Image 1 (cartoon, rainbow, N blue to C red):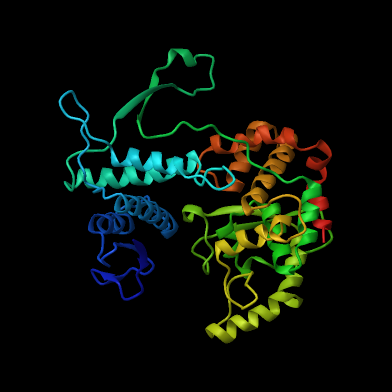
Image 2 (cartoon, rainbow, N blue to C red):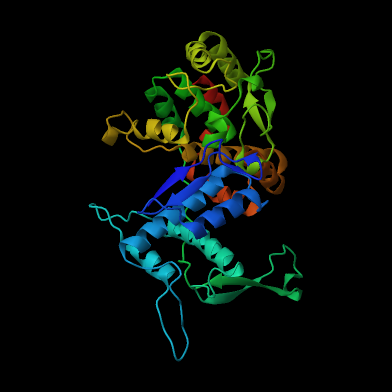
Length: 394
């Protein structure tokens, strides 16, 4: 089993659809139901705004169908659970197998939350097949949970309750607090990075909460020489996902803010730093100027995995200088916690939550509220002087 990707020659009704994942089986034949489902997601489903989402679905289906093939199980094998008939759900078998995978150190390969994400993708695949007559069953039992209506009012008890549909496949998980970096760890991290490019990528995420895909597609057009007369000013930048390749999650536009000093560093980087050399390499290779602020040492755009690799190599167990592990999302979590603290002091907690929700690009404020609990893990001095000290780090 493997995934292959279409190129620009792949067309449907005269329109080109490159980079579409297609699942191929061990006989090098297309797995038709998966193909139908993926094409539906790409062409029909308006909720899907990114090929990254499609790739995530395809990756889950690849893992699932590889498991089925290895165990001689058909994806369409009937699931029966009544008084006269009984058969096992292939999805339940896959879930239990995923939970059984253990590394040499005793830790599991796949967390329960990751398994649930895969199950969610597979459930949608089976829903599609069931509704389109490819199968006449759904391989799970539907459950219903009663959840009180979340109205912040003393009359909440007078309102009805919400009935939520679930299933017997989902594993029970508990939310963990996001891991953050202290100011000292931020200082150590930036000091441990040799490349000016990665120092600035790190500072930019710590100062704005950008996601990996957003920072590697961050366009040079956002950067200009700032006025240094007011160093306390924050400079607004509007991320427009249709602008020269700038990407955001769900292709939703949003506004971020840069400090004056960071804007100055980025301006100098464009004109005098590593960026000049990498920019020339890009132009020689592709024949036109790069819209992106950050390029790798070969003059090409970064991949998301490149950021993970760079930060992973900084820890001592990978030959680096850091006594702690870092991944890009830790930088994002750190920003959100600091920003929430600062804004809650300025405008109150309720408005601060709405502010940080917009800065982070969260679809629901409930996602943002977890950072209220993270504030306690940082000292007040760190929370108060974070941006100033971050600007001074080299």
